[in-house]
Length: 107
Length: 410
Image 1 (tube, rainbow over the protein chains, first blue to last red):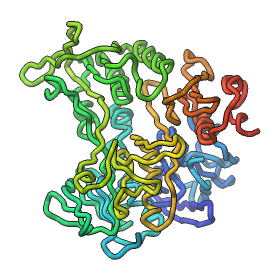
Image 2: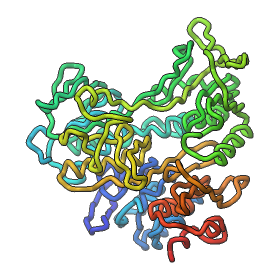
Image 3: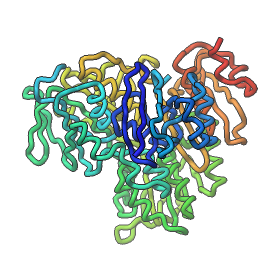
């Protein structure tokens, strides 16, 4: 289990412990965390699971794939920590990671 | 529409119904939530059934939108494998086929639709398949034996996606399309022509403008498709992608207003304020296009579900969707945004031959829709262009040296 803290755009924090190997999008959905939609089910198709990873954890993540980079490049509200949560798998080194959610996944 | 004790009953356990249930809890709905579904499965994602799941790239478990434990923890009661047979509006109850009666404060109709049958002799044969459910996807998957002849009837998303998977599994694939081109309902002639070329190059025998007279059967199995011009196309497996019929019968029998789907307002309410409808079955007034529309898509289901949950919780979240759709065929990710119907100009960005390009559909200089192929950046920007509804410079739109984002940054 790894602990992740999701922070909604309005500041509401959700602390969850989830199984390693699961992706961050599914963990958010399974815990009914508002702000992550995941319409395409994790196929890197829809960009409705966009999140901002706190900079200190970025280096611990596997680099984004070409597909994910293309999605991120198309975002209107990208930040240095922008990632698609469906592409990030939970692992012990991410313990305590803070993930911030955008105001909307639609625009 | 506050809770008076009976809570919410949701009829339909597809993506729309499931999203309503969990959104209600996310928005703090405290009452009872019961979801009635004809299927025995946990609510699951249908798009992979004709794509990654049929292609044996993902597991059955991965189709579930959420695990059973999530619903249990959220206090969402799943009544699986049972059909609702009547709505009694005066009593505010729903009757199930097993005799149970469920009371509601708010009722949500998320009944979706069913396969539109092909009214042809022989279409009832055992090796003729449709595709909406896990079981139907399994049946097609089992029949996909290398070297066998697969005939796909229909040139829409389902037909073309199944054709692509058939090629992947080593079948001999023929696609029979009644209209003059594939994807005719959803895109322009240029994109249709591109996809016909892609399928032919992959080995699919694509036939457009064909009239089928019957399916030839031997001992209850289809062996060939008979065409009006006398040609006989041998078949071991047949898959029909003939669209969806919205399941409005329960609503209709209860006296709710129906047309092409169940008619709802911007807050997803039907003509009875205690009954809402959502997803494939709901026909909503679309502010972007200025008319009533019904979309068959996951984004429509999940976004409209939020409107439904908000209405039930006494908040207003009018439904203003920018519709979008996706289809995976071979190595191509097609993403479409907006509805191109009525366009008067089309602008290409990039070369189709590169297999990464976009088509923009304009009306009076405004982008009303776009199709993007393997081009996520353009898709994301196209959503914005469609939402903004302002005229754009067509030369800049076509100029691949300019990032599309620059069109609305000024």
